Structures are given as C-alpha cells and as structure tokens.
Length: 147
Length: 136
Image (tube, rainbow over all chains, first blue to last red; front, side, top):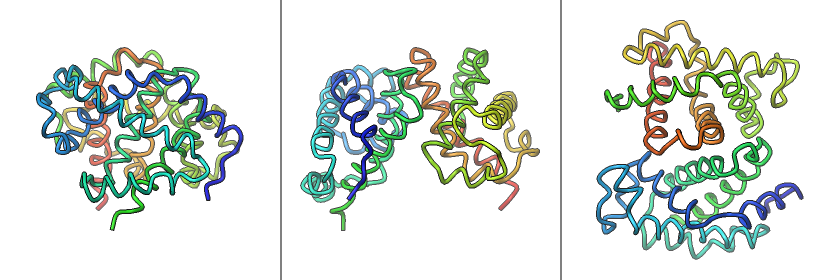
C-alpha cells in the first residue's frame, strides 16, 4: 500500500482539478513522440508524424493525448489503490497494445516537463516530488500485469 | 546517436538565452535532484546542508552550470573537452539532466519548445557518454 501524506494528496488533486486536459495531453504526447521518436511505432495509423511541426499539428495526437491524460483520472480518484484500479489498463497495454513498459516512464517525464511549464514557479521541488511519486506509482501499476 | 549541426545550433541558441539565469538554473536543478531523488544525497554526505537552496547546494549548482557551459563551448569535441571532470558524474547525470530540463521548462516555457527539449536531451546524453568514455 502506498503511503500518501496530506500534502501529496492535496497536491495531486489540486494539479488535476486545474489541469487543461486539451493542452497538456496534446503537449505531453507530442513531446514524447518528438523527443523519443521510437515511441511513434505505436501510432502507425496517425498519419503525418514526419517532423516536430507535423506532430505538434496532428489532430490524432491531440485527441489521443487527451485520452491518455484522462486515463490518469482513475488514479487520481483511487489514490489508495491505484494497483487494483489499473489492473485492466495494464492488461490492455500488455496484451492488446503491446507497449514496452519502459516507455511509460518516458511519457511520464514529458508530462512532468509540460506540467512544470504550466505551473512555473508553482512547480516547487515539493510539488515535483509529489507529482513524480504519483506518476511512479501509476507506471508501476501499469507494468504489473505484464508477463 | 550523434549531434547534428541543427542540434548543436539549437543547444547553443538556447544556452545563450538562458545563461543569464545560469546560477538559478544550477541551484534549482541540483536542489530538485537531491529532494526528488534522495538516493543522490549519498554522494554529498560531506556537505553540512542538503536542503533545497542551501549554501553548499547553491555553490555546487554554480559549478555544475559552469561545467555545462564548458560542454556547450566544446560541443564539437566533447570527448576531449571534458577530461577534467570526474567519472562519477557520468552515471548520475541522467537524473540531474531530467531536473535541468524540468527547470528550463519552468523558467523558459516559451523557449523550451519540443525541438529544444529534443536537442538538450540528446546533448546531455552525449555529455554523459563523453564523461564516461575514458573510464571504462
């Protein structure tokens, strides 16, 4: 069981309640595809991903970024049992989508950077630590059903 | 992976823009590394104070950023240009690099575009490689 301090709980709820899902989802996924281009292999049907400009302007990337980010809502609402909440999603990513789980951390890093840009000075070391701890638990839960 | 002419130009351009805030960047990045990744504190047990923004952290942050500035200068020959730095840095650089990128996103959200992010990520990977080159 993950132990969360009051500060960590409040911080996570706060970040997500103020989150602009359209912008942050699109930016995080686009950054992942640009900075770690091997992740493009999972999106063969997304059309034009040939360069950074194309990826940033791609409507399928924007739409899917939003889907992925909303996927985190499950964890935000179930912080005391993210492992159980993500069991199905973990099976999905493993059995159906065949995503190498090492890439979850990379997307998490891109999301951290986008949120940092959004919050500016509000992204203090303490807030960063809470956010990264949250993402680490999510990533670990998503990896769990791989075999 | 090697740095293209465009990568080098992007890194140099971004560095020129951000270097006025170099000391703050060094302090913030190092503070975050120690706070968010407590295992990195094991390398600094000889410091009196490891809390974010403390005097030893600020001082070393300044040194770190000086080292990065040197790497930017020597970007065309990192393998020979960084000989004076300890091999210890190479293995921990990944964690520090991530925190530098976070700080750049915070302080320069408009300049730290995805292209700049890519170039800096590649640059730091290259710096880490150059640092470890002579040691194994």
